[in-house]
Image (cartoon, rainbow, N blue to C red):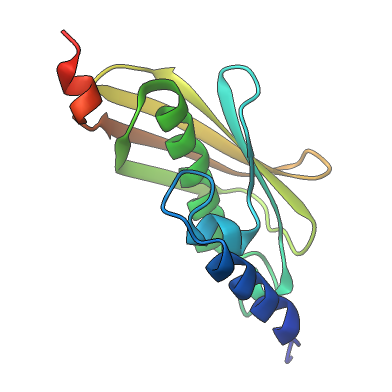
Length: 150
């Protein structure tokens, strides 16, 4: 079975990402290409996007790598928003259901904060069905601003 991809839509997403490219949280190329909408409700970070046809795998479902990336971004932006720059040390993703089209909402939350942080994130479809779950370990980076603090 051959699935058609809307090339014009994919090209428009690429052009949108390239035109506004900035190396900053929430506005970097990949976030713009995926059309991520990033918010910070309470002590969480939510990353929402649409499962566009050009993000689907050959089986016609959202590619697991795209979903893992969105979960990682939800956790990374949470750490950045709450504690500063950090990097993923490890991440585990469990895929529970497939999504073919529609809205995906990833919510990242901290389990424990410190020099090493433990986080979790879950992805749900627009009906609230849990489609993936991730846990990760992050290391806060020593930045000039953090190093200056006693």
